[in-house]
Image 1 (cartoon, rainbow, N blue to C red):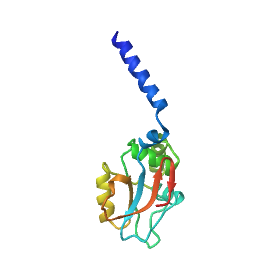
Image 2 (cartoon, rainbow, N blue to C red):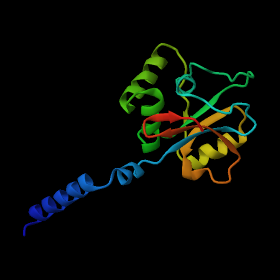
Image 3 (cartoon, rainbow, N blue to C red):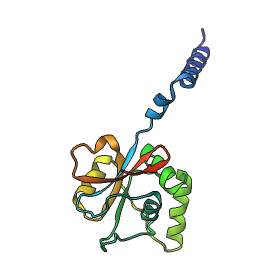
Image 4 (cartoon, helix red, strand yellow):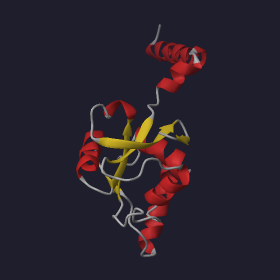
Length: 158
C-alpha cells in the first residue's frame, strides 16, 4: 500500500471515529472556563452583558469605585476563542478588528493578554479589582471567587 493510501485510510478512520463519537465525548474536548475575581471583591456573580462591558472596556470601574483590571488568555488560544465567542459574540478576527478600531479612534485599550492561566490566577489573587478567566480545572485551592462560568458558548451563573 502506498504512503498516500495509508494516510488517506488513516484520515478516513479518524473522520469516522469523530462521527461515531458520543456527543459527551466531543463536548469534553473543550474545557469549561470560570470567570474569577479577587476574593476581596464584593462581586458575587456577573452576567453576559456585564462581562461584555468589562471585556470591551466599556465598564472601567467596579460599583465601589475600584478600577477594573481585566486579564485575557492569549489571542487564538482555545480558552480565548471560547471566551470571545460566548461573551463578546465574536470570532477571533472580529475581536482583533474591534481593538484595532478602538486604538485608531483613541478609545479604550484591550484587557491585558497573559500567557498562562497560572499567571492570571496569581494576578487575580493579588490585585484588587482584577478579573480574568481560566479553565475550571486550574482553580483548585486558589484564593479567588468564581463569578460566572463559560460552558461552550454560554455564560452561566457560578
